Length: 292
Ligand SMILES: *[C@@H]1O[C@H](CO)[C@@H](O)[C@H](O)[C@H]1NC(C)=O
Ligand SMILES: *[C@@H]1O[C@H](CO)[C@@H](O)[C@H](O)[C@H]1NC(C)=O
Ligand SMILES: *[C@@H]1O[C@H](CO)[C@@H](O)[C@H](O)[C@H]1NC(C)=O
Image (tube, rainbow, N blue to C red; front, top):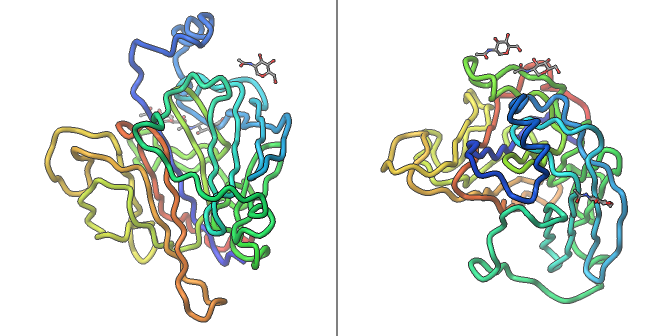
């Protein structure tokens, strides 16, 4: 069970530019141009499951927006596809994309991910298990031998702190954590997972982090981390974005149940590598003992 939780919020933001994707409806642009983005995800409706289909190697779930679009930092995408693939006994691949496939994804001839084994029995014997709730859609991943243990990845609202949380940077309202629904917009993605207190997070380069390789998650006296992953042509400032960005992280978790062995979970975030922010906020005192 979680003794305590902190939230980990991954935000991908693209600065609005003139060229919106041509596939979105003209009216949306016009409405948007008049009102501007709300810059607030508290009214974002999340997604609901409309259908699901078992495949040989996993599951495909179709989602649709669960209410009126919030257009927080872009335009909400109506239909999403969640592809769950059991690739090996220790690797589970979850791919969430816009069903119409109008959003940019890195072409497979640039980076071809390993496809894994073509083994239908993995669904029933893989070490990792995918679980989800339908309305709103939220998912969590557990170890098969420890289904009631602390999930390795957990987007359920009940596992996350109550919102709104005040802006991480007091002068910048766009750093407020107004809600943790799944947000999938043409210029913004939000997916939130609960972590154990004092999580060991590595990666999210490229940065010269004052905390060292292990990123500051706001415990042990740290202030938390805000990182812009938007490449800029500067060499090596401390705790600032620099000339490269590598949107992946690794969480290393100690598991007392496995006789002091450490276990590693790694997540690769396939996103536009030029423009994103990551927040690892300090644990607010009132959520320090939130029960799961
Ligand atoms: C979303 O999916 C529904 C079917 O579930 C379809 O009728 C609708 O046209 C789709 N909308 C968009 C914008 O792709
Ligand atoms: C976002 O909206 C909610 C109400 O829906 C409000 O409580 C919150 O303060 C807003 N956030 C900001 C940064 O203004
Ligand atoms: C931030 O949001 C609060 C609450 O909505 C508002 O009172 C304040 O003026 C906003 N500050 C800025 C800098 O926009």
